[in-house]
Image 1 (cartoon, each protein chain N blue to C red):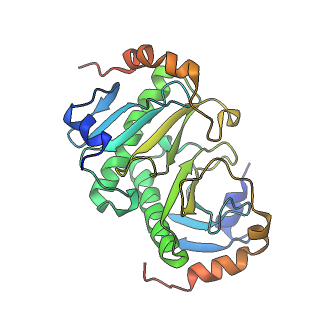
Image 2 (image 1 turned 90 degrees about the vertical axis):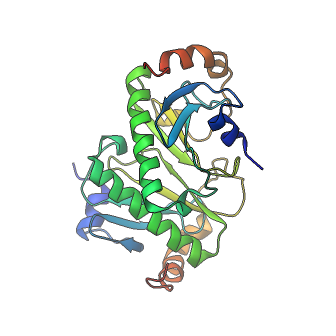
Length: 129
Length: 131
């Protein structure tokens, strides 16, 4: 059975794409805890991050870094926080959460303001090409 | 000003080490949120993980992966979750938290675990290099 992420990768479910390359996709989390809360996933499904083959794992981490640079630049946040839980969807995904202070953490509930701004945030972060 | 982590790397401050390689060090967090709560740090200081040079960044994540395997095997947990915040100490560190369920809503520091850090480190290191 394919997960929601595979359907997003296949284009069967829409997403607010932030970045993409051959093997990875980054899109806005639909339950954002902050403006610009993004998920970075490998297009190939692996349940558990640390079970990924070394090269795929390194590729995903490099993708997370590229996306974090974009988030920081475009949103002007102080830093981008990384979280990997892996319980929600059995397809490895890295949460990237733009933050400005430790007060933004930890683990707040979905932020109504950020939800309301999903579309405008997606526009702001849309790939240029 | 050197951080506590520099003192740990230099050996001036003790830690409960669970993994080390040429570039990285992993040791138990002294304020554990879960049994086996570990910090993975680069030996060379950087303030922000995404500012690290590419090779150092990849070495660090590779160490996190190795340490997570060891934790999972030694503690028999379902998986190891991770987060990187970077607000506490001005030296990049990855938190690894052994976990068995989805409940991960900002648990408080576990004071009992804090008292038994040495035993936890001993348990984790008992599996040697087989992880």
